[in-house]
Length: 77
Image (cartoon, rainbow, N blue to C red; front, side):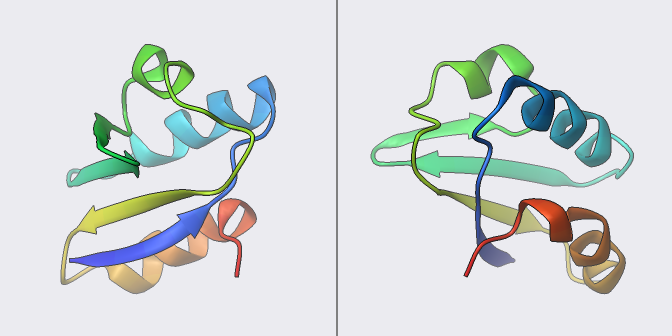
């Protein structure tokens, strides 16, 4: 498992993000405070505070490089 910080600060970014993560056959969780949301759930994402970066847990060990390449536009330092 790997955790990265992502920013989803617009509706278009959220839609594009959900489209990108649903391409993979692995689990993604968004963690904001005590809430853990399935990252493939657009309704779940909109229930979070999107004004600040969110932790994304990627539950995959083999295709991590490809996943990080696809998700690069959302990742913040």
